[in-house]
Image (tube, helix red, strand yellow):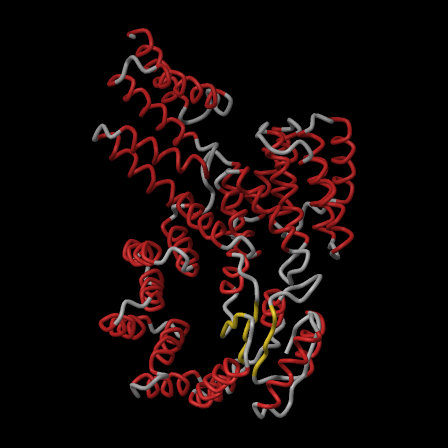
Length: 529
Protein backbone atom coordinates (compact mmCIF):
# COMPACT_ATOMS: atom_id res chain seq x y z
CA UNK A 1 0.00 0.00 0.00
CA UNK A 2 1.73 3.17 -1.19
CA UNK A 3 0.83 6.72 -0.18
CA UNK A 4 2.96 9.69 0.82
CA UNK A 5 0.73 10.49 3.82
CA UNK A 6 1.47 8.21 6.79
CA UNK A 7 -1.99 8.85 8.28
CA UNK A 8 -3.67 7.53 5.12
CA UNK A 9 -1.32 4.53 5.00
CA UNK A 10 -2.16 3.72 8.62
CA UNK A 11 -5.90 4.08 7.99
CA UNK A 12 -5.88 1.75 4.96
CA UNK A 13 -3.50 -0.63 6.75
CA UNK A 14 -6.07 -0.96 9.55
CA UNK A 15 -8.90 -1.48 7.04
CA UNK A 16 -6.96 -4.24 5.27
CA UNK A 17 -6.17 -6.03 8.52
CA UNK A 18 -9.81 -5.93 9.59
CA UNK A 19 -10.70 -7.42 6.18
CA UNK A 20 -8.43 -10.37 6.97
CA UNK A 21 -5.48 -9.43 4.75
CA UNK A 22 -2.60 -11.23 6.43
CA UNK A 23 0.44 -9.38 5.09
CA UNK A 24 0.58 -5.72 4.20
CA UNK A 25 3.73 -3.82 3.20
CA UNK A 26 3.64 -0.03 3.06
CA UNK A 27 5.70 2.56 1.20
CA UNK A 28 5.77 6.35 1.34
CA UNK A 29 7.31 7.15 -2.05
CA UNK A 30 7.84 5.73 -5.52
CA UNK A 31 11.41 4.55 -4.98
CA UNK A 32 10.34 2.49 -1.95
CA UNK A 33 7.53 0.82 -3.94
CA UNK A 34 9.90 -0.14 -6.76
CA UNK A 35 12.55 -1.34 -4.31
CA UNK A 36 10.09 -3.53 -2.38
CA UNK A 37 8.62 -4.94 -5.59
CA UNK A 38 12.12 -5.85 -6.80
CA UNK A 39 12.44 -8.16 -3.80
CA UNK A 40 8.91 -9.45 -3.30
CA UNK A 41 5.81 -10.30 -5.34
CA UNK A 42 2.38 -9.10 -4.24
CA UNK A 43 -1.23 -10.14 -4.88
CA UNK A 44 -2.48 -6.56 -4.92
CA UNK A 45 -0.70 -3.19 -5.06
CA UNK A 46 -2.73 -0.17 -3.91
CA UNK A 47 -0.74 2.85 -5.14
CA UNK A 48 -1.72 6.49 -4.81
CA UNK A 49 -1.23 8.60 -7.93
CA UNK A 50 0.32 11.42 -5.93
CA UNK A 51 3.35 10.16 -4.03
CA UNK A 52 4.73 13.56 -3.01
CA UNK A 53 7.69 15.19 -4.71
CA UNK A 54 9.12 13.12 -7.53
CA UNK A 55 7.62 10.13 -9.26
CA UNK A 56 3.87 9.50 -9.36
CA UNK A 57 1.91 6.28 -9.27
CA UNK A 58 1.94 6.41 -13.08
CA UNK A 59 5.75 6.40 -13.07
CA UNK A 60 5.73 3.50 -10.61
CA UNK A 61 3.45 1.41 -12.83
CA UNK A 62 5.52 2.24 -15.93
CA UNK A 63 8.76 1.31 -14.20
CA UNK A 64 7.45 -1.91 -12.68
CA UNK A 65 6.40 -3.04 -16.15
CA UNK A 66 9.62 -1.74 -17.76
CA UNK A 67 11.74 -3.71 -15.27
CA UNK A 68 9.46 -6.75 -15.47
CA UNK A 69 8.70 -6.52 -11.74
CA UNK A 70 4.91 -6.91 -12.08
CA UNK A 71 3.80 -10.54 -12.37
CA UNK A 72 0.70 -11.15 -14.52
CA UNK A 73 -1.27 -12.27 -11.47
CA UNK A 74 -0.53 -9.08 -9.49
CA UNK A 75 -3.39 -6.57 -9.50
CA UNK A 76 -2.26 -2.92 -9.61
CA UNK A 77 -4.93 -0.52 -8.34
CA UNK A 78 -4.33 3.19 -8.84
CA UNK A 79 -5.75 5.29 -6.00
CA UNK A 80 -6.28 9.00 -6.42
CA UNK A 81 -8.03 12.08 -5.16
CA UNK A 82 -7.01 13.96 -8.31
CA UNK A 83 -9.93 15.31 -10.33
CA UNK A 84 -7.97 17.20 -13.01
CA UNK A 85 -8.81 15.76 -16.39
CA UNK A 86 -5.20 15.42 -17.57
CA UNK A 87 -4.26 13.44 -14.46
CA UNK A 88 -7.34 11.24 -14.59
CA UNK A 89 -6.73 10.53 -18.28
CA UNK A 90 -3.05 9.93 -17.59
CA UNK A 91 -3.90 7.42 -14.86
CA UNK A 92 -6.34 5.57 -17.15
CA UNK A 93 -3.86 5.81 -20.02
CA UNK A 94 -1.25 3.73 -18.22
CA UNK A 95 -3.90 1.00 -17.82
CA UNK A 96 -3.86 -0.09 -14.18
CA UNK A 97 -6.00 -3.14 -13.43
CA UNK A 98 -8.39 -0.97 -11.44
CA UNK A 99 -8.89 2.57 -10.24
CA UNK A 100 -10.15 3.81 -6.85
CA UNK A 101 -11.18 7.37 -6.11
CA UNK A 102 -10.53 8.79 -2.64
CA UNK A 103 -12.01 8.92 -0.06
CA UNK A 104 -11.89 5.16 0.47
CA UNK A 105 -14.21 3.43 2.92
CA UNK A 106 -13.81 -0.04 4.40
CA UNK A 107 -16.94 -1.19 2.58
CA UNK A 108 -15.68 0.07 -0.77
CA UNK A 109 -12.30 -1.57 -0.23
CA UNK A 110 -13.83 -4.90 0.79
CA UNK A 111 -16.16 -4.95 -2.20
CA UNK A 112 -13.33 -4.17 -4.62
CA UNK A 113 -10.84 -6.64 -3.14
CA UNK A 114 -13.42 -9.44 -2.92
CA UNK A 115 -14.28 -8.94 -6.57
CA UNK A 116 -10.63 -8.86 -7.63
CA UNK A 117 -9.66 -11.95 -5.67
CA UNK A 118 -12.62 -13.96 -6.97
CA UNK A 119 -11.71 -13.00 -10.53
CA UNK A 120 -8.06 -13.90 -9.91
CA UNK A 121 -9.16 -17.29 -8.60
CA UNK A 122 -11.31 -17.89 -11.69
CA UNK A 123 -8.41 -17.00 -13.99
CA UNK A 124 -5.69 -18.79 -12.00
CA UNK A 125 -5.37 -21.68 -14.55
CA UNK A 126 -4.72 -19.07 -17.26
CA UNK A 127 -2.02 -17.33 -15.19
CA UNK A 128 -0.43 -20.70 -14.47
CA UNK A 129 -0.34 -21.64 -18.18
CA UNK A 130 1.06 -18.26 -19.23
CA UNK A 131 3.72 -18.36 -16.51
CA UNK A 132 4.74 -21.76 -17.91
CA UNK A 133 4.85 -20.32 -21.44
CA UNK A 134 2.00 -22.65 -22.50
CA UNK A 135 -0.03 -20.40 -24.82
CA UNK A 136 -2.21 -23.23 -26.17
CA UNK A 137 -3.43 -24.23 -22.70
CA UNK A 138 -4.02 -20.59 -21.73
CA UNK A 139 -6.20 -20.15 -24.84
CA UNK A 140 -8.13 -23.38 -24.09
CA UNK A 141 -8.80 -22.23 -20.51
CA UNK A 142 -9.99 -18.83 -21.72
CA UNK A 143 -12.30 -20.46 -24.28
CA UNK A 144 -13.88 -22.45 -21.44
CA UNK A 145 -14.25 -19.31 -19.31
CA UNK A 146 -15.69 -17.26 -22.16
CA UNK A 147 -18.36 -19.92 -22.84
CA UNK A 148 -19.37 -20.21 -19.18
CA UNK A 149 -21.79 -17.27 -19.49
CA UNK A 150 -21.05 -16.00 -16.00
CA UNK A 151 -19.66 -12.74 -14.64
CA UNK A 152 -16.18 -13.51 -16.02
CA UNK A 153 -17.21 -14.36 -19.58
CA UNK A 154 -16.69 -10.87 -20.98
CA UNK A 155 -13.26 -10.44 -19.35
CA UNK A 156 -12.31 -13.89 -20.67
CA UNK A 157 -13.44 -12.95 -24.20
CA UNK A 158 -11.42 -9.74 -24.10
CA UNK A 159 -8.28 -11.55 -22.91
CA UNK A 160 -8.81 -14.40 -25.38
CA UNK A 161 -8.95 -11.93 -28.27
CA UNK A 162 -5.64 -10.44 -27.12
CA UNK A 163 -4.00 -13.88 -27.06
CA UNK A 164 -5.39 -14.78 -30.50
CA UNK A 165 -3.88 -11.58 -31.93
CA UNK A 166 -0.61 -12.14 -30.08
CA UNK A 167 -0.52 -15.65 -31.57
CA UNK A 168 -1.35 -14.33 -35.10
CA UNK A 169 -4.68 -16.23 -35.09
CA UNK A 170 -6.53 -13.35 -36.72
CA UNK A 171 -9.45 -15.38 -38.12
CA UNK A 172 -10.30 -16.71 -34.66
CA UNK A 173 -9.87 -13.28 -33.10
CA UNK A 174 -12.17 -11.69 -35.68
CA UNK A 175 -14.88 -14.31 -35.12
CA UNK A 176 -14.66 -13.71 -31.37
CA UNK A 177 -14.95 -9.92 -31.73
CA UNK A 178 -17.83 -10.13 -34.21
CA UNK A 179 -19.71 -12.51 -31.88
CA UNK A 180 -19.20 -10.12 -28.96
CA UNK A 181 -20.49 -7.21 -31.06
CA UNK A 182 -23.71 -9.09 -31.87
CA UNK A 183 -24.77 -8.57 -28.28
CA UNK A 184 -23.23 -5.21 -27.30
CA UNK A 185 -21.36 -2.33 -28.91
CA UNK A 186 -18.07 -2.82 -27.07
CA UNK A 187 -15.10 -0.51 -27.75
CA UNK A 188 -12.55 -3.21 -26.98
CA UNK A 189 -14.22 -5.58 -29.48
CA UNK A 190 -14.24 -2.91 -32.21
CA UNK A 191 -10.60 -2.11 -31.43
CA UNK A 192 -9.68 -5.79 -31.62
CA UNK A 193 -11.48 -6.09 -34.95
CA UNK A 194 -9.57 -3.05 -36.26
CA UNK A 195 -6.27 -4.58 -35.14
CA UNK A 196 -7.11 -7.79 -37.04
CA UNK A 197 -7.89 -5.78 -40.18
CA UNK A 198 -4.70 -3.76 -39.76
CA UNK A 199 -2.58 -6.88 -39.32
CA UNK A 200 -3.95 -8.23 -42.61
CA UNK A 201 -3.23 -4.95 -44.40
CA UNK A 202 -6.96 -4.14 -44.72
CA UNK A 203 -6.32 -0.56 -43.67
CA UNK A 204 -9.53 1.02 -44.99
CA UNK A 205 -11.70 -1.35 -42.97
CA UNK A 206 -9.53 -0.89 -39.88
CA UNK A 207 -9.90 2.86 -40.28
CA UNK A 208 -13.72 2.59 -40.47
CA UNK A 209 -13.90 0.68 -37.17
CA UNK A 210 -11.49 3.07 -35.45
CA UNK A 211 -13.36 6.17 -36.61
CA UNK A 212 -16.53 4.61 -35.30
CA UNK A 213 -14.90 4.22 -31.86
CA UNK A 214 -13.48 7.75 -31.59
CA UNK A 215 -16.68 9.31 -32.91
CA UNK A 216 -18.73 7.55 -30.23
CA UNK A 217 -16.12 7.67 -27.45
CA UNK A 218 -13.53 10.42 -28.14
CA UNK A 219 -11.64 9.64 -24.91
CA UNK A 220 -10.83 6.03 -25.81
CA UNK A 221 -7.09 6.52 -26.25
CA UNK A 222 -6.04 3.05 -27.52
CA UNK A 223 -8.11 3.74 -30.65
CA UNK A 224 -5.95 6.76 -31.56
CA UNK A 225 -2.75 4.71 -31.22
CA UNK A 226 -4.07 1.96 -33.49
CA UNK A 227 -5.44 4.61 -35.87
CA UNK A 228 -1.99 6.23 -36.07
CA UNK A 229 -0.43 2.83 -36.81
CA UNK A 230 -3.09 2.19 -39.46
CA UNK A 231 -2.29 5.47 -41.21
CA UNK A 232 1.41 4.63 -40.98
CA UNK A 233 0.65 1.31 -42.66
CA UNK A 234 -1.14 3.20 -45.46
CA UNK A 235 1.81 5.56 -45.82
CA UNK A 236 -0.36 8.53 -44.83
CA UNK A 237 2.06 10.21 -42.43
CA UNK A 238 0.03 13.44 -42.21
CA UNK A 239 -3.00 11.56 -40.93
CA UNK A 240 -0.73 9.57 -38.61
CA UNK A 241 0.49 12.82 -37.10
CA UNK A 242 -3.08 14.14 -36.74
CA UNK A 243 -4.18 11.01 -34.86
CA UNK A 244 -1.21 11.28 -32.48
CA UNK A 245 -1.81 14.99 -31.93
CA UNK A 246 -5.41 14.28 -30.96
CA UNK A 247 -4.26 11.63 -28.49
CA UNK A 248 -1.71 13.91 -26.79
CA UNK A 249 -4.31 16.66 -26.55
CA UNK A 250 -6.48 14.26 -24.53
CA UNK A 251 -3.64 12.74 -22.50
CA UNK A 252 -0.48 14.89 -22.69
CA UNK A 253 1.55 13.05 -20.04
CA UNK A 254 2.45 9.91 -22.01
CA UNK A 255 6.17 10.19 -22.76
CA UNK A 256 6.13 7.39 -25.34
CA UNK A 257 3.31 9.01 -27.31
CA UNK A 258 5.04 12.42 -27.17
CA UNK A 259 8.23 10.83 -28.52
CA UNK A 260 6.33 9.17 -31.33
CA UNK A 261 4.55 12.42 -32.22
CA UNK A 262 7.91 14.21 -32.32
CA UNK A 263 9.40 11.58 -34.63
CA UNK A 264 6.41 11.57 -37.00
CA UNK A 265 6.19 15.40 -37.09
CA UNK A 266 9.95 15.59 -37.75
CA UNK A 267 9.54 13.14 -40.62
CA UNK A 268 6.75 15.37 -41.96
CA UNK A 269 9.07 18.37 -41.54
CA UNK A 270 6.50 19.92 -39.22
CA UNK A 271 9.28 21.16 -36.98
CA UNK A 272 7.12 23.36 -34.73
CA UNK A 273 5.00 20.40 -33.64
CA UNK A 274 8.09 18.19 -33.35
CA UNK A 275 9.83 20.78 -31.16
CA UNK A 276 6.87 20.94 -28.77
CA UNK A 277 6.55 17.16 -28.55
CA UNK A 278 10.27 16.59 -27.92
CA UNK A 279 10.29 19.34 -25.29
CA UNK A 280 7.48 17.58 -23.42
CA UNK A 281 9.26 14.24 -23.81
CA UNK A 282 12.41 15.70 -22.21
CA UNK A 283 10.39 17.13 -19.33
CA UNK A 284 8.41 13.92 -18.79
CA UNK A 285 11.67 11.98 -18.98
CA UNK A 286 12.93 13.70 -15.82
CA UNK A 287 11.00 11.13 -13.79
CA UNK A 288 10.12 8.42 -16.30
CA UNK A 289 12.05 5.21 -16.87
CA UNK A 290 11.60 5.96 -20.58
CA UNK A 291 13.64 9.20 -20.40
CA UNK A 292 16.89 8.94 -22.41
CA UNK A 293 19.63 11.09 -23.90
CA UNK A 294 18.10 10.77 -27.37
CA UNK A 295 15.15 12.91 -26.19
CA UNK A 296 17.52 15.82 -25.50
CA UNK A 297 19.32 15.28 -28.82
CA UNK A 298 16.01 15.14 -30.69
CA UNK A 299 15.01 18.49 -29.19
CA UNK A 300 18.35 20.06 -30.17
CA UNK A 301 18.14 18.59 -33.69
CA UNK A 302 14.68 20.02 -34.32
CA UNK A 303 15.54 23.32 -32.61
CA UNK A 304 18.40 23.80 -35.12
CA UNK A 305 15.95 23.19 -38.00
CA UNK A 306 13.43 25.67 -36.56
CA UNK A 307 16.04 28.40 -36.12
CA UNK A 308 17.53 27.76 -39.57
CA UNK A 309 14.05 28.01 -41.14
CA UNK A 310 13.31 31.15 -39.07
CA UNK A 311 10.16 29.58 -37.64
CA UNK A 312 8.29 31.37 -34.89
CA UNK A 313 9.83 29.70 -31.84
CA UNK A 314 10.61 31.15 -28.39
CA UNK A 315 13.73 33.39 -28.48
CA UNK A 316 15.59 31.21 -25.95
CA UNK A 317 15.20 28.02 -28.01
CA UNK A 318 18.86 27.90 -29.07
CA UNK A 319 20.16 28.40 -25.52
CA UNK A 320 17.69 25.83 -24.22
CA UNK A 321 18.83 23.31 -26.84
CA UNK A 322 22.50 23.78 -25.89
CA UNK A 323 21.60 23.47 -22.19
CA UNK A 324 19.73 20.22 -22.91
CA UNK A 325 22.76 18.84 -24.73
CA UNK A 326 24.83 19.57 -21.60
CA UNK A 327 22.11 18.02 -19.46
CA UNK A 328 22.23 14.84 -21.57
CA UNK A 329 25.96 14.49 -20.83
CA UNK A 330 25.41 14.98 -17.11
CA UNK A 331 22.31 12.84 -16.68
CA UNK A 332 22.98 9.95 -19.01
CA UNK A 333 26.01 7.92 -19.93
CA UNK A 334 26.73 8.90 -23.55
CA UNK A 335 28.56 6.42 -25.76
CA UNK A 336 31.04 7.66 -28.38
CA UNK A 337 28.35 8.00 -31.08
CA UNK A 338 25.96 9.97 -28.87
CA UNK A 339 28.85 12.17 -27.72
CA UNK A 340 29.74 12.89 -31.37
CA UNK A 341 26.08 13.56 -32.22
CA UNK A 342 25.80 16.02 -29.32
CA UNK A 343 28.82 17.91 -30.68
CA UNK A 344 27.37 17.94 -34.20
CA UNK A 345 24.07 19.29 -32.92
CA UNK A 346 25.82 21.98 -30.93
CA UNK A 347 27.60 23.01 -34.16
CA UNK A 348 24.28 22.94 -36.05
CA UNK A 349 22.69 25.29 -33.52
CA UNK A 350 25.60 27.75 -33.72
CA UNK A 351 25.41 27.54 -37.51
CA UNK A 352 21.65 28.24 -37.44
CA UNK A 353 22.38 31.27 -35.23
CA UNK A 354 24.82 32.42 -37.92
CA UNK A 355 27.76 31.93 -35.55
CA UNK A 356 29.85 30.37 -38.32
CA UNK A 357 33.24 30.58 -36.58
CA UNK A 358 32.01 28.70 -33.52
CA UNK A 359 30.23 26.18 -35.75
CA UNK A 360 33.46 25.62 -37.75
CA UNK A 361 35.41 25.01 -34.55
CA UNK A 362 32.79 22.49 -33.43
CA UNK A 363 32.84 20.75 -36.83
CA UNK A 364 36.64 20.46 -36.75
CA UNK A 365 36.43 18.95 -33.29
CA UNK A 366 33.72 16.52 -34.44
CA UNK A 367 35.73 15.37 -37.46
CA UNK A 368 38.72 14.68 -35.21
CA UNK A 369 36.78 12.09 -33.16
CA UNK A 370 34.08 11.04 -35.63
CA UNK A 371 34.10 7.38 -36.79
CA UNK A 372 32.98 7.49 -40.46
CA UNK A 373 32.67 3.70 -40.65
CA UNK A 374 30.15 3.58 -37.80
CA UNK A 375 27.07 1.41 -38.37
CA UNK A 376 24.88 4.01 -36.64
CA UNK A 377 22.90 5.70 -39.43
CA UNK A 378 21.61 8.39 -37.03
CA UNK A 379 25.20 9.57 -36.53
CA UNK A 380 25.74 9.87 -40.30
CA UNK A 381 22.41 11.67 -40.75
CA UNK A 382 23.46 14.36 -38.27
CA UNK A 383 26.83 14.73 -40.03
CA UNK A 384 25.19 15.17 -43.46
CA UNK A 385 22.69 17.66 -42.02
CA UNK A 386 25.56 19.64 -40.49
CA UNK A 387 27.57 19.72 -43.74
CA UNK A 388 24.50 20.94 -45.66
CA UNK A 389 23.70 23.57 -43.02
CA UNK A 390 27.27 24.87 -43.26
CA UNK A 391 27.05 25.17 -47.02
CA UNK A 392 29.38 22.25 -47.78
CA UNK A 393 26.98 20.66 -50.29
CA UNK A 394 29.66 18.97 -52.46
CA UNK A 395 31.21 17.33 -49.42
CA UNK A 396 27.74 16.25 -48.26
CA UNK A 397 26.92 14.76 -51.70
CA UNK A 398 30.18 12.80 -51.75
CA UNK A 399 29.50 11.53 -48.25
CA UNK A 400 25.94 10.53 -49.21
CA UNK A 401 27.27 8.52 -52.15
CA UNK A 402 29.61 6.71 -49.75
CA UNK A 403 26.74 6.03 -47.34
CA UNK A 404 24.58 4.53 -50.12
CA UNK A 405 27.37 2.03 -50.76
CA UNK A 406 27.99 1.39 -47.05
CA UNK A 407 24.30 0.75 -46.32
CA UNK A 408 23.39 -0.82 -49.67
CA UNK A 409 21.91 -3.89 -47.94
CA UNK A 410 20.23 -2.05 -45.07
CA UNK A 411 16.80 -0.95 -46.28
CA UNK A 412 15.92 0.84 -43.02
CA UNK A 413 19.09 2.94 -43.26
CA UNK A 414 18.41 3.69 -46.93
CA UNK A 415 14.89 4.85 -46.05
CA UNK A 416 16.45 7.48 -43.78
CA UNK A 417 18.94 8.57 -46.43
CA UNK A 418 16.13 9.02 -48.98
CA UNK A 419 15.24 12.43 -47.56
CA UNK A 420 18.55 13.78 -48.93
CA UNK A 421 18.38 12.16 -52.36
CA UNK A 422 16.91 13.13 -55.73
CA UNK A 423 15.44 9.64 -56.04
CA UNK A 424 14.73 7.24 -53.15
CA UNK A 425 17.34 4.51 -52.72
CA UNK A 426 15.18 2.22 -50.57
CA UNK A 427 12.72 -0.27 -52.05
CA UNK A 428 9.88 0.84 -49.75
CA UNK A 429 10.18 4.54 -50.59
CA UNK A 430 10.61 3.88 -54.31
CA UNK A 431 7.35 1.92 -54.22
CA UNK A 432 5.65 4.67 -52.19
CA UNK A 433 6.71 7.43 -54.60
CA UNK A 434 5.61 5.34 -57.57
CA UNK A 435 2.17 4.79 -56.01
CA UNK A 436 1.77 8.48 -55.15
CA UNK A 437 2.85 9.49 -58.65
CA UNK A 438 0.33 7.09 -60.22
CA UNK A 439 -2.48 8.44 -58.06
CA UNK A 440 -1.49 12.08 -58.69
CA UNK A 441 -1.14 11.59 -62.44
CA UNK A 442 -4.58 9.91 -62.61
CA UNK A 443 -6.06 12.91 -60.79
CA UNK A 444 -4.20 15.31 -63.11
CA UNK A 445 -5.55 13.51 -66.18
CA UNK A 446 -9.07 13.94 -64.76
CA UNK A 447 -8.34 17.68 -64.28
CA UNK A 448 -8.69 17.20 -60.51
CA UNK A 449 -5.80 19.61 -59.98
CA UNK A 450 -6.30 20.40 -56.29
CA UNK A 451 -6.41 16.73 -55.33
CA UNK A 452 -3.42 16.00 -57.55
CA UNK A 453 -1.44 18.80 -55.89
CA UNK A 454 -2.41 17.53 -52.45
CA UNK A 455 -1.17 14.09 -53.45
CA UNK A 456 2.20 15.32 -54.80
CA UNK A 457 2.72 17.77 -51.91
CA UNK A 458 2.15 14.98 -49.40
CA UNK A 459 4.97 12.97 -50.96
CA UNK A 460 7.16 16.06 -51.36
CA UNK A 461 7.12 16.54 -47.59
CA UNK A 462 8.85 13.19 -47.26
CA UNK A 463 11.17 13.54 -50.24
CA UNK A 464 11.79 17.28 -50.67
CA UNK A 465 14.54 16.79 -53.27
CA UNK A 466 12.68 14.37 -55.52
CA UNK A 467 12.89 16.04 -58.95
CA UNK A 468 10.06 14.00 -60.49
CA UNK A 469 7.61 15.03 -57.78
CA UNK A 470 8.64 18.67 -58.08
CA UNK A 471 8.09 18.57 -61.84
CA UNK A 472 4.70 16.91 -61.39
CA UNK A 473 3.71 19.77 -59.08
CA UNK A 474 4.75 22.34 -61.71
CA UNK A 475 2.88 20.50 -64.46
CA UNK A 476 -0.26 20.42 -62.29
CA UNK A 477 0.09 24.13 -61.46
CA UNK A 478 0.43 24.94 -65.17
CA UNK A 479 -2.71 22.90 -65.87
CA UNK A 480 -4.60 24.75 -63.16
CA UNK A 481 -3.34 28.14 -64.46
CA UNK A 482 -5.10 27.40 -67.75
CA UNK A 483 -8.41 27.01 -65.88
CA UNK A 484 -7.82 29.92 -63.49
CA UNK A 485 -5.67 32.44 -65.42
CA UNK A 486 -6.48 35.31 -63.05
CA UNK A 487 -5.20 33.62 -59.90
CA UNK A 488 -1.87 35.30 -58.92
CA UNK A 489 -1.16 32.69 -56.22
CA UNK A 490 -0.84 29.97 -58.86
CA UNK A 491 1.78 31.95 -60.74
CA UNK A 492 3.70 32.59 -57.50
CA UNK A 493 3.61 28.92 -56.50
CA UNK A 494 4.80 27.90 -59.95
CA UNK A 495 7.72 30.36 -59.79
CA UNK A 496 8.73 29.12 -56.33
CA UNK A 497 8.76 25.51 -57.53
CA UNK A 498 10.79 26.37 -60.64
CA UNK A 499 13.30 28.28 -58.50
CA UNK A 500 13.67 25.29 -56.16
CA UNK A 501 14.26 22.89 -59.04
CA UNK A 502 16.79 25.24 -60.61
CA UNK A 503 18.84 24.85 -57.43
CA UNK A 504 18.71 21.05 -57.66
CA UNK A 505 19.14 20.27 -61.34
CA UNK A 506 21.73 20.79 -64.08
CA UNK A 507 21.93 20.00 -67.79
CA UNK A 508 23.28 16.53 -67.11
CA UNK A 509 20.22 15.50 -65.11
CA UNK A 510 17.95 13.02 -66.96
CA UNK A 511 14.90 15.20 -66.25
CA UNK A 512 16.49 18.48 -67.36
CA UNK A 513 14.67 18.52 -70.73
CA UNK A 514 11.31 18.03 -69.00
CA UNK A 515 12.20 20.86 -66.60
CA UNK A 516 13.02 23.18 -69.52
CA UNK A 517 9.77 22.29 -71.29
CA UNK A 518 7.67 22.94 -68.19
CA UNK A 519 9.52 26.17 -67.49
CA UNK A 520 8.64 27.46 -70.98
CA UNK A 521 5.03 26.30 -70.58
CA UNK A 522 4.78 28.18 -67.28
CA UNK A 523 6.09 31.40 -68.81
CA UNK A 524 3.79 30.98 -71.82
CA UNK A 525 0.77 30.77 -69.52
CA UNK A 526 1.92 33.86 -67.64
CA UNK A 527 2.40 35.83 -70.87
CA UNK A 528 -1.01 34.70 -72.07
CA UNK A 529 -2.53 36.22 -68.93
